[in-house]
Every structure is written in structure tokens, then in C-alpha cells.
Length: 221
Image (cartoon, rainbow, N blue to C red; front, side, top):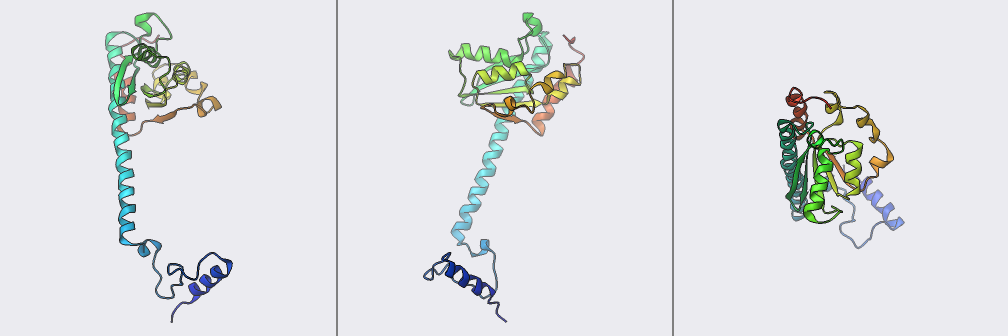
């Protein structure tokens, strides 16, 4: 027996003005029920499928790009320790998909407690680009920035921050644990006018390995 409940529902919608009596698309379907997806024209289905595939490809491209630049920051972290310049931290500033500067922690080399990788990278990028605002740049850091570095990133107007290891990875080998809690979860951190991304998967793994692989090569300062 045919199911007329959909026809009754359509009549109620017609009375309420939700549908038009001239519209074929709005007419009741009293036959076998099909999904909304099945009722769409084939062309529209293909269009939606292409959009979905395009979005997935775009996300994969961004992830690949982030991994490439984050890997450079990790390389800097190793380089800084090998040179005896400071702790295992690296940072890269990127503009239009090109590396502007690639820097590492210089605290010991410069006898300067503020010469963290991110601060050093911002200073060098500003000099190289000849400006004090880096609104069209991104920064990749091997580890979650400390409050000082986060403040420098914010003041430079950098539009996007991508970091690898979480602060806890640095704490595990002896760096100050107050760094992890000073800003995280605060309104200042949450309302920063930048995109903040913590890498996952392989990106996070290679960044976290830096601390384990270098802890015997430098003295805590």
C-alpha cells in the first residue's frame, strides 16, 4: 500500500506557505522513499564530490607544507646544540612560501637570556625585510614558544604560528615548568590575532625527539 504520509506533510507545508504548488520539486513523493542525495541530479553529485576531494587535497597540501618548514626549524634546533650556541630550539620565518631566516637558540653564544630561537628569528627577519611588522609572514618553531617568544611573535604581527613539540617535552629535560602555564589558557593567548597550530603526527614526533637526542650534548643553563 502506498504511503501518503509524505503527501499530507506536503499539503501542510503548502498551507503554511513553505512550498509552491507550481514547483515539481516540492510535490509529494508517495512512492518508495529515496535519500536527498539520491534525488540530486548527477551533475550536482559530481560537483559536490569534486569540492570534497579539493578540500581534502588542500588540507593535505597545507600539512605537507607545514611539515617541510617545521623540519627546517628542527634542523636548526640540532644545529644550535652541535655548535654549542644554546638549547635545542629552532625557528624559521616564512614569507610567500620562501624561508626568510632560519635561526636557533643563541643564549650561550651571545650571553643573552633573551636570545631564544623565535626572538632571534624575528629580529633577523625584520632586518632582512627592512620592516618591524611581519603581518605577511609565518613562523615555525620546533617547540611551543615561551611567554617572551609568544609576546615577540604577537608584537611582530606574524599571522600564523606552527610549533612542533609541546612545552612539556622541554620541561621533561629540565627547562622551567612555569613557561608551560604562564600563558596557556589565558585570554591573552586565546585572543591573539594569529592562527596557532600545533603539529601532529610525524611533525610533532620529530620535534619531540630533539630533546631526547640532544640532552647529553648540552648543559642546562
